[in-house]
Length: 124
Image (cartoon, rainbow, N blue to C red; front, side):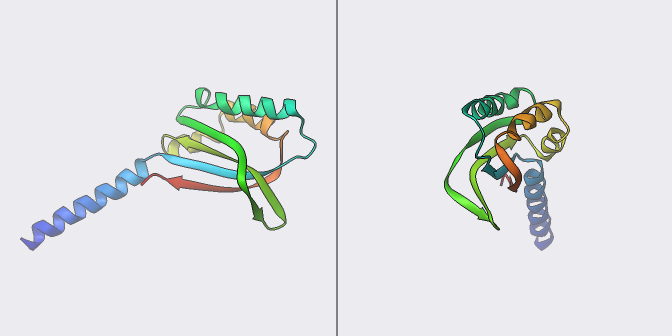
């Protein structure tokens, strides 16, 4: 009987680990705005951010905006943030070299100081 309980427990534990590895992933980052960025630069960045899910396979949603409370990272103050919901870790990996990201990044560079505070959240 104890063997059966142990096997069932191990299967459940393994299944939970496997589903977490295969689950969605939220890639988030906070950044410092370039003071000289124009309204047109911000509009282009927001528009490109909204269009990104249609250009990157596995990217489901993108949220971009001003942080309610700025974050401090050393001497930098991060006033803005973004989160990108990916289908899984493989989609995030593919995103790094995608044409959609390269196009979006060229607009992102016009509104942010180089350097970000980045973290990824795995779906539980």
